[in-house]
Length: 291
Image 1: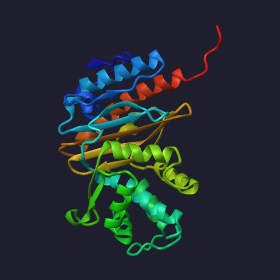
Image 2: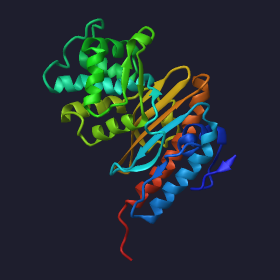
Image 3: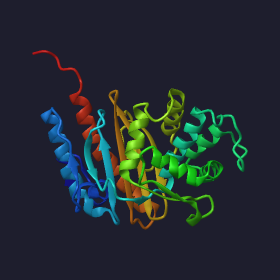
């Protein structure tokens, strides 16, 4: 057992260390962003140190990006390292589909070929339930080459699609923590899609039914609109954390696992580490009484 530098809470080093551990572990390139508030600078430094201690537990590699409410990097690790995306590809596909709707090229009420569901229904189950059949059908309908070209045009240059190498209804794809965090940050700011499409996608993320990962470590008062990604050896979680009216973007990508059960406890511990920082930062933003 080890004790967090931010308090007396103890947790298993291997578990907590796995997901956020490599975040500031063996590789270079980790970054902490200075803030004007020394309390938050100290909290970010403590988070970095805790995550560095925890890094050794991840069996493969860990990539993390955590952004504060102003979009500044709090901590990063392997932000530009490509990972097999698993179901995180559905974030980029939803962006492409909703952009088509915003431009009038399709309607949310249109029926998706192969599915018998409307576009809106397919997006809903693809995001909130991570339905693979809906993701594969939407991608084939738009055209995977077109979806990838759109992602690159939008600035997500490291995100690729290769459905030919995937299994039935499971699309092979790569992405990076930086690309995932950038998409979520632009979505949060309302810069990715129209107002109605932004609200729709955020609603699907808020309705996420797969809460085995980071959210399993969050307290009930912490909001998390997110998307998970899971394969045999890959486990990811990324989304928008809300506390005290402040939003934080987090993307945590990991690989090298032997199975789902191995990664799940680690993500709960990782969530507790992230919450500890977010809670300190949110508290520091509250108005202070005059002396």
